[in-house]
Image (cartoon, rainbow, N blue to C red; front, side):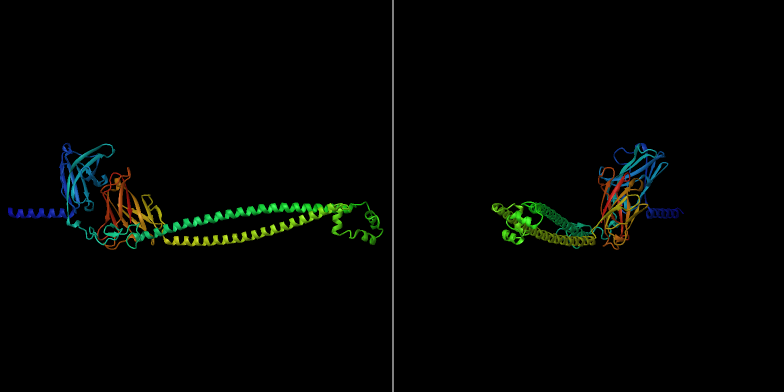
Length: 489
């Protein structure tokens, strides 16, 4: 009978143990509050397997009602923070403090230090450490994920860099594989930008030429004004001579007369009729010679004044001819200038056409980037080739919706570790939907503290598992601050 009871007890114990192992490993510690935290970190020593889900139960000899607790894991004792369990994930009930850590949040194998910290629920100004101890974490063969830790150590080309799990061309090397393929268009865009700068210089040169043309027009205008003044002066002189001659003829230079016989008697003093007058004078009264003689009051002894009139007339005629030649030259220059201006306008039109064509090519490159918040709370800021990317938070998972034809280049997520914990997931739909372990696209990741900008040591990002290839898992964030998480794809 005793043997049968022993067998039943062994079977019952085995069954309970098996059930506990299958569900969750429980780490139980009994503590006296007055004896803990002496600085030796010997309040507990809990060996953890690197692939187990872990549950912790700390029991005390006094009630802990009215306090909240957080739990931290570091290595070494003053080194990197590997995990912060927030107060929202820890239950304080009576004399017990309980919490769990999923296997995906267990740090890599090694010897770690752990500390349970409490603070008053109504005030975060009063703190007390409740336990300090050691957490050795052992290796599990199920941490050896297929292909995850493989890397290529040969066949790297000149200038390539290693980004797990491949050697790739960096953005500053133009190539046709890896990341460089996404950056070639940006390099071409920079070349076109330089061309635009040269185009602007050409526009400036044409503008300067137009300024010089305007100066030439102004000089010609000034010359024309001077020419006009000279012509007006010459015309006034000629009109003066003509008016003087007309006045002298009208008044009668030799006296007042009313008929031809009186005029003949006044001028010749010999003739009494027209035929005799013609014999004496030798020209008609409407001839230019007669008009000139009247204008200058020329008589038989006035030869000098007649010569003066002849010289003045010749000079005036020569000046008018010179002005006509100058005017013809000016008209020719104006015609040439109009032709040059027409050619300049044609060149400007051709340059504008070329610029428009260049702009169309640039627009077709697809190198334009957009930066904007992708969620309604302004906690997700993205850089992408198009707009309308949205990010939705459900519990601790951000899901990105990316329109067809749009590529996401990078994202910055502001994560509230105090209320949401030290880890979360990012699901990348459409654009980065990976289908196999070999084609998944892990992010280049970095995390910072929001209060002082320091890098969060130990924070990491890796693909989820061998099923959800489009999912990134983030670990090791601070559970008492905001975390700034930067992803680059």
